[in-house]
Image (cartoon, rainbow, N blue to C red; front, side, top):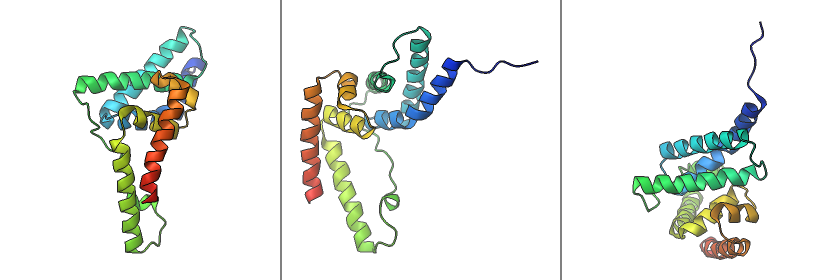
Length: 172
């Protein structure tokens, strides 16, 4: 007796989950959600995606759709949590980001530079930080505009301004 395997839609959802789970979790964590809340948001996004596709709704730009729904759910969760400020820093191991063999002074300089850069990112307005994080996750300007519901020119302006600010930190 053959046991039927998962339906093609379920395979597609699993593939999309494997592709977008970590980037989406990083993004919603960057919006100020603790990891457990972020994981819950990610699960809700993929449940909504399953229902969206099962109902035969459009499959165009699923990456943008996933991040837009994740963005909106993360905002709702953040409001439920009563947290307006960024509370969760993505965990980083500095030693993983610098070449082995650095002397202690070089390593310390690298750590201090990274801390300045993170402080500058933390000081960005929410919109600027969201644009930066979405771009870092590989979304195109048009997808970012759809996720954040701003114009394409607005995305370009925000990212340009943000990169100038971060460039000043890099120049230090």
